[in-house]
Length: 289
View (cartoon, rainbow, N blue to C red):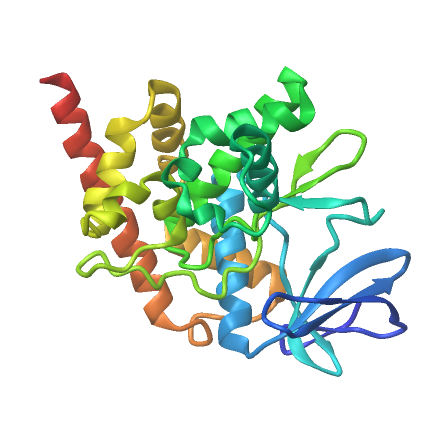
């Protein structure tokens, strides 16, 4: 496909399907040369933010959609349709609700966010096991869910919630790749803002008012078992400097993006790495004591 100022110019495109998002906006699924893509109209700042976060995910070997700049009537981004066969999708929220209905016979209309231990990783495991009853599948899905949480902490995404994690119920079920990074880098380590991902690990700290992200991440790692702690730290050490990520994006788009992606995001990425590094170092010291 031809590029114009970094954007793929989509031609000979057929509209496959239109899906309605939670915010009421429509997102077309288009077909190009027998391949399906999602197209999201957005300004260049948001488009490049999504591409940057996608590169971060790839650098730590966590599943993500692969975003690209594109023009389809208007400017925006495209990504491969990860559910080409349109298999049934079950959100993590629905999975947990089904399990709670089975476990405590709650009313289907009841808000399951009322249950504090909803966010316990053990409950997520049990919910998966209740639905699939296959240890191999459950372990694979659980690993991918944990990876999603880890990534959202790395990029300070305030929009990770249990409707944004879905299981594609193909013959071999899998978690949909991470996507939708519009609200990344909105966590401020100096103030009490943090993503749902942190709330997802440690909601009790939210209820008691302990909202500082550094404290919450430290509590997550302290209260987790060794396998999760090691997974988090090993993924952290795979993170690449922003200069390497930007070079990869520039090679892909064929344009210089140094003055097109806001410095705010790049500076936030650096500060996140530094803050998490300090947390890990302090944690390592405390565990040795």
